[in-house]
Length: 145
Image 1 (cartoon, rainbow, N blue to C red):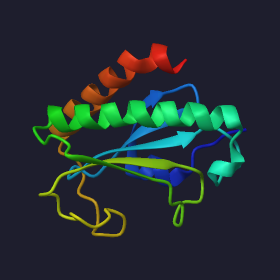
Image 2 (image 1 turned 135 degrees about the vertical axis):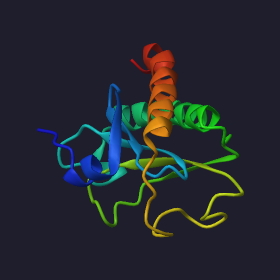
Image 3 (image 1 turned 120 degrees about the vertical axis):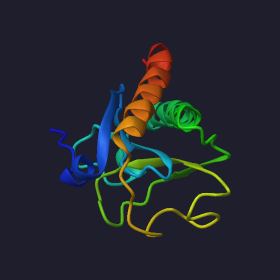
Image 4 (image 1 turned 90 degrees about the vertical axis):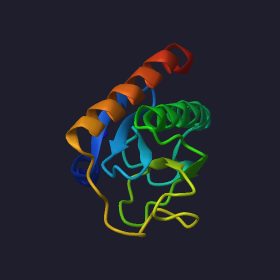
C-alpha cells in the first residue's frame, strides 16, 4: 500500500492526484517547484517502476513542466529553464523534482538542492501558485489518463 513519506507533507502542498503520481508544490517561494511522487509502494528508484509506469511518468513530468511554468507566470517570474531530477538521498521514496529556474534565482546556476533553507510562500503567492498549477494540470488530465 502506498503511503506518502511525512517529509513531503512537511515541505510541500498538495496539487493534483495524477494517474501515476501525486503532485505537490514545494514550499519554497523562491522557485516554481513541483515534486511528483509515484504512488507505488516501496519504489525508491526509477527501475522499480514497470515499463508502462515509466512511460506514464514521463508524460506526468512534461505536464508538471507546464504547471511549473504556469506558477512562474502567475507569480510574475517567468521560468527560463526547467531542471528535472530524481535524487532521493535525503528522502528515499521515489520522487521527481521539476524546478523552474531563472538566472536571477538565488542558486543560479548551481542546483537548488542544499543551496540554502527554503523560504515559505506568502499566503497570497501560495494561493496564486496553487491555482495556476492546478489549472495547468487539469488542462492536461485528459491527456494523462
